[in-house]
Image: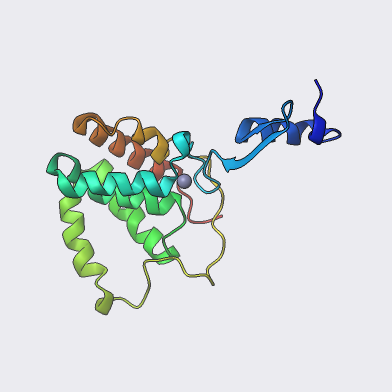
Length: 177
Ligand SMILES: [Zn+2]
Protein backbone atom coordinates (compact mmCIF):
# COMPACT_ATOMS: atom_id res chain seq x y z
CA UNK A 1 0.00 0.00 0.00
CA UNK A 2 1.34 3.44 -0.91
CA UNK A 3 1.05 5.58 2.19
CA UNK A 4 2.05 8.75 0.33
CA UNK A 5 2.22 11.53 2.85
CA UNK A 6 2.29 8.95 5.64
CA UNK A 7 5.39 7.15 4.32
CA UNK A 8 7.50 6.16 7.29
CA UNK A 9 4.69 6.72 9.80
CA UNK A 10 4.86 4.24 12.63
CA UNK A 11 2.36 1.42 11.87
CA UNK A 12 0.58 1.84 15.21
CA UNK A 13 0.19 5.56 14.64
CA UNK A 14 -1.07 4.89 11.12
CA UNK A 15 -3.61 2.42 12.51
CA UNK A 16 -4.73 5.06 15.01
CA UNK A 17 -5.03 7.73 12.30
CA UNK A 18 -7.04 5.50 9.98
CA UNK A 19 -9.36 4.17 12.66
CA UNK A 20 -9.84 7.20 14.85
CA UNK A 21 -9.70 10.08 12.41
CA UNK A 22 -11.21 10.37 8.97
CA UNK A 23 -7.89 9.92 7.24
CA UNK A 24 -7.38 7.82 4.17
CA UNK A 25 -3.63 7.62 3.68
CA UNK A 26 -3.92 5.85 0.32
CA UNK A 27 -5.71 8.84 -1.19
CA UNK A 28 -3.83 11.47 0.72
CA UNK A 29 -7.10 12.84 2.07
CA UNK A 30 -6.79 14.42 5.45
CA UNK A 31 -9.92 15.50 7.24
CA UNK A 32 -8.86 16.44 10.71
CA UNK A 33 -12.30 15.74 12.08
CA UNK A 34 -12.14 13.66 15.20
CA UNK A 35 -14.88 11.08 15.24
CA UNK A 36 -14.74 10.17 18.88
CA UNK A 37 -14.67 12.20 22.07
CA UNK A 38 -11.22 12.59 23.64
CA UNK A 39 -12.74 12.79 27.13
CA UNK A 40 -15.48 10.13 27.35
CA UNK A 41 -14.52 8.09 24.26
CA UNK A 42 -18.03 8.30 22.80
CA UNK A 43 -18.37 7.92 19.04
CA UNK A 44 -19.22 11.09 17.10
CA UNK A 45 -21.15 9.64 14.18
CA UNK A 46 -22.62 12.21 11.79
CA UNK A 47 -20.24 14.75 13.34
CA UNK A 48 -22.46 15.09 16.40
CA UNK A 49 -20.27 15.96 19.37
CA UNK A 50 -21.18 14.87 22.90
CA UNK A 51 -22.24 18.44 23.66
CA UNK A 52 -24.62 18.46 20.67
CA UNK A 53 -26.10 15.11 21.70
CA UNK A 54 -26.49 16.40 25.26
CA UNK A 55 -28.24 19.55 24.00
CA UNK A 56 -30.70 17.36 22.07
CA UNK A 57 -31.36 15.30 25.20
CA UNK A 58 -32.06 18.42 27.24
CA UNK A 59 -34.47 19.71 24.60
CA UNK A 60 -36.37 16.38 24.71
CA UNK A 61 -36.36 16.26 28.52
CA UNK A 62 -37.58 19.83 28.94
CA UNK A 63 -40.35 19.48 26.36
CA UNK A 64 -41.68 16.01 27.19
CA UNK A 65 -42.22 14.60 30.72
CA UNK A 66 -41.83 11.04 29.37
CA UNK A 67 -38.19 11.98 28.75
CA UNK A 68 -37.87 14.47 31.60
CA UNK A 69 -38.21 11.86 34.37
CA UNK A 70 -34.56 10.81 33.93
CA UNK A 71 -33.23 14.37 33.65
CA UNK A 72 -31.16 14.23 36.82
CA UNK A 73 -29.40 11.04 35.63
CA UNK A 74 -28.69 12.45 32.16
CA UNK A 75 -27.03 15.54 33.60
CA UNK A 76 -25.07 13.54 36.20
CA UNK A 77 -23.72 11.05 33.63
CA UNK A 78 -22.79 13.72 31.11
CA UNK A 79 -21.06 15.87 33.73
CA UNK A 80 -19.18 12.93 35.32
CA UNK A 81 -18.00 11.46 32.02
CA UNK A 82 -16.82 14.89 30.80
CA UNK A 83 -14.92 15.88 33.97
CA UNK A 84 -17.19 18.85 34.58
CA UNK A 85 -17.77 18.23 38.32
CA UNK A 86 -15.46 19.34 41.13
CA UNK A 87 -14.14 16.61 43.45
CA UNK A 88 -16.73 17.61 46.08
CA UNK A 89 -19.54 17.45 43.54
CA UNK A 90 -18.32 14.04 42.30
CA UNK A 91 -18.44 12.63 45.84
CA UNK A 92 -21.92 14.05 46.39
CA UNK A 93 -23.20 12.83 43.03
CA UNK A 94 -21.81 9.32 43.56
CA UNK A 95 -23.90 8.98 46.72
CA UNK A 96 -26.99 10.34 44.97
CA UNK A 97 -26.59 8.08 41.94
CA UNK A 98 -26.30 5.09 44.24
CA UNK A 99 -29.54 6.13 45.97
CA UNK A 100 -31.36 6.33 42.63
CA UNK A 101 -30.05 3.28 40.78
CA UNK A 102 -29.66 0.92 43.77
CA UNK A 103 -31.97 2.13 46.52
CA UNK A 104 -35.12 3.15 44.70
CA UNK A 105 -34.98 6.88 45.45
CA UNK A 106 -36.69 8.83 42.66
CA UNK A 107 -34.60 11.26 40.64
CA UNK A 108 -37.19 13.95 41.42
CA UNK A 109 -36.44 13.58 45.17
CA UNK A 110 -32.76 13.99 44.45
CA UNK A 111 -33.50 17.21 42.61
CA UNK A 112 -35.30 18.55 45.67
CA UNK A 113 -32.36 17.56 47.90
CA UNK A 114 -30.02 19.10 45.40
CA UNK A 115 -31.81 22.40 45.73
CA UNK A 116 -31.25 22.27 49.50
CA UNK A 117 -27.81 20.59 49.86
CA UNK A 118 -26.22 22.21 46.90
CA UNK A 119 -27.83 25.61 47.19
CA UNK A 120 -25.18 28.14 46.28
CA UNK A 121 -25.56 30.00 49.57
CA UNK A 122 -25.41 26.86 51.78
CA UNK A 123 -22.22 25.35 50.50
CA UNK A 124 -18.65 26.47 50.49
CA UNK A 125 -17.73 24.55 47.35
CA UNK A 126 -18.36 24.75 43.64
CA UNK A 127 -20.19 22.20 41.49
CA UNK A 128 -18.18 22.97 38.36
CA UNK A 129 -14.64 21.65 38.20
CA UNK A 130 -12.10 24.42 38.71
CA UNK A 131 -8.96 24.81 36.60
CA UNK A 132 -6.74 24.45 39.69
CA UNK A 133 -8.17 20.95 40.42
CA UNK A 134 -6.09 17.88 39.52
CA UNK A 135 -6.64 15.97 36.24
CA UNK A 136 -9.13 13.13 36.60
CA UNK A 137 -8.11 9.62 35.51
CA UNK A 138 -9.07 8.55 31.98
CA UNK A 139 -11.78 5.90 32.11
CA UNK A 140 -12.92 3.53 29.36
CA UNK A 141 -16.66 3.88 29.92
CA UNK A 142 -18.72 0.88 28.78
CA UNK A 143 -21.67 3.18 27.99
CA UNK A 144 -21.38 6.77 26.74
CA UNK A 145 -23.86 9.37 25.57
CA UNK A 146 -23.37 8.05 22.00
CA UNK A 147 -24.90 4.68 23.00
CA UNK A 148 -27.93 6.37 24.55
CA UNK A 149 -28.32 8.65 21.51
CA UNK A 150 -29.29 5.68 19.34
CA UNK A 151 -32.40 5.23 21.51
CA UNK A 152 -33.56 8.85 21.69
CA UNK A 153 -36.57 8.44 19.39
CA UNK A 154 -38.57 6.36 21.84
CA UNK A 155 -39.03 7.71 25.40
CA UNK A 156 -39.31 4.27 27.05
CA UNK A 157 -36.18 2.92 25.48
CA UNK A 158 -34.44 6.29 26.02
CA UNK A 159 -35.16 6.22 29.76
CA UNK A 160 -34.05 2.57 29.99
CA UNK A 161 -30.76 3.50 28.37
CA UNK A 162 -30.22 6.54 30.56
CA UNK A 163 -30.65 4.26 33.60
CA UNK A 164 -28.16 1.77 32.10
CA UNK A 165 -25.78 4.68 31.46
CA UNK A 166 -26.15 5.79 35.08
CA UNK A 167 -25.51 2.26 36.43
CA UNK A 168 -22.37 1.88 34.32
CA UNK A 169 -21.16 5.37 35.24
CA UNK A 170 -21.64 4.68 38.94
CA UNK A 171 -19.79 1.34 38.72
CA UNK A 172 -16.94 2.64 36.63
CA UNK A 173 -16.37 6.15 38.04
CA UNK A 174 -13.21 6.61 40.08
CA UNK A 175 -12.75 9.61 42.28
CA UNK A 176 -9.45 8.39 43.70
CA UNK A 177 -6.57 7.49 41.40
ZN1 LIG B 1 -17.73 12.74 25.26
